[in-house]
Length: 311
Image (cartoon, rainbow, N blue to C red; front, side, top):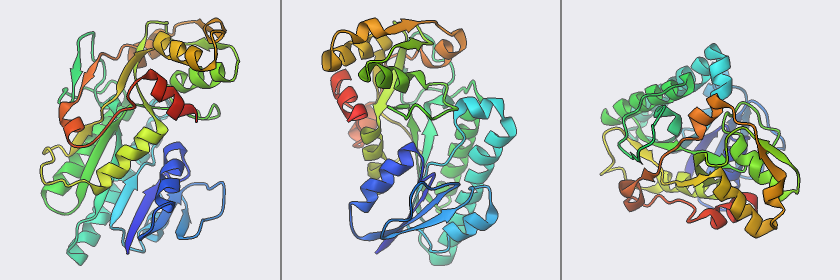
């Protein structure tokens, strides 16, 4: 029986991933987070604490994991406002986890698979042309810089055979709960949730703004694929740019109108914020043939995205 560790297990993505893992058999789970909304389900052990807490990390790694899903992070906008917090969680704690896993791997002779939730924030400003999965990374936020630094460290430990890492560069995952804060891309989820509920929404990017979209179920499917796939032919970077849907806000509103009625178009208005638009509303078409060939996937089209994101 294999053992799986999930960091950030109580979060938006973590909670959905844990639900999927609990629905399958053949493994046990350790869940690490700074808070839990419910008692540990059968087959899982909860560890309450921050990834930056050495005692909590020791407890989380007590049962040597075969697979680790590392989802815990400080989101981008919050990490930009509170640099030290982002540095400690997004970089230092990630490196501490990776090196502890490497130590365990050397002791056991078996490298753990580490699936790292990186981010498209590693790219920075992509300009108006198309983008591809080997796009140079030039982060414009500390969050993206720390994710990129972590990717490089994980790739080096994988080169040495100490761990077996797969870094996934995640886009905006929708539709996050309205109560979540710290995400500069929050408009991507809010426009869906507000219009689906028949509520007005003032969008901080213009109608033609384009973003990279992925539903939560699609994200979880890609994480699970990353844990099971062979890494024999993985790139030296161990980083995969996931396939995404490149859609405008108008395109999302149209899909919402097809599902929830034409009034959706009347509910949205726009007060563009130049910084949010520059960071999250000017994403060019993204080409990922290698990721698609490796078995990663996107949602298909805008209608399928809405259905999956809001089900």
